[in-house]
Length: 221
Image 1 (cartoon, rainbow, N blue to C red):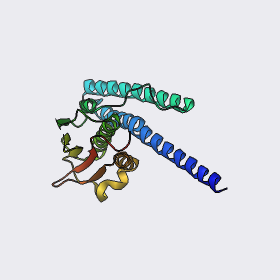
Image 2 (cartoon, helix red, strand yellow):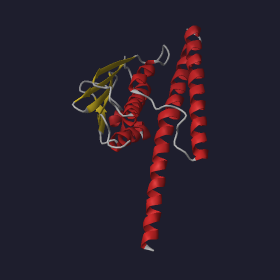
Image 3 (cartoon, one colour):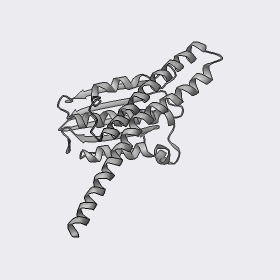
Image 4 (cartoon, helix red, strand yellow):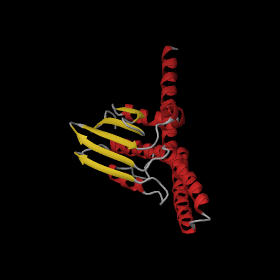
């Protein structure tokens, strides 16, 4: 009976980890695109009368984001039905972070700086760095009132990779924790699973800053 109970507990732990992984992937892919769609829809509605060309551009961004969302959803459904690990799409890489600067003319501009030793990152670490940057940029675009830009810095040094994402908007009411919700939880889980840390809070002067530190090689593959 002891062995049977132990086996059941192990199975429960495996199922829990799988649910947590699925929750992170859903949030970091589908929720990211849907958030972008909502932002561009608001911009398009605001600009429709006075700047119709900008409104059309917002609609184009919405169309592209919707297509990516549908592709991601189909991939996830296929993985769940097959009961296999995702293998159809390559994991995101640090170099892909530059794509996150795209978001339409009404989106906050994003500046990305890469420095140091980033050539030996494991795929799991690269994916975590990308997802942390992605979620941080999404949060800034949604919640950073009166911000003029977002700065992303990725640096590899002393066997670690450091991620810093900051904006110059107003400080979040109440520290911003409740509004960030599952995204902040998911970022911290990603960092912790690889032996790293992640902190988020008001910037030294204004705005919001997310900082993460991960081992270059990670602690799990």
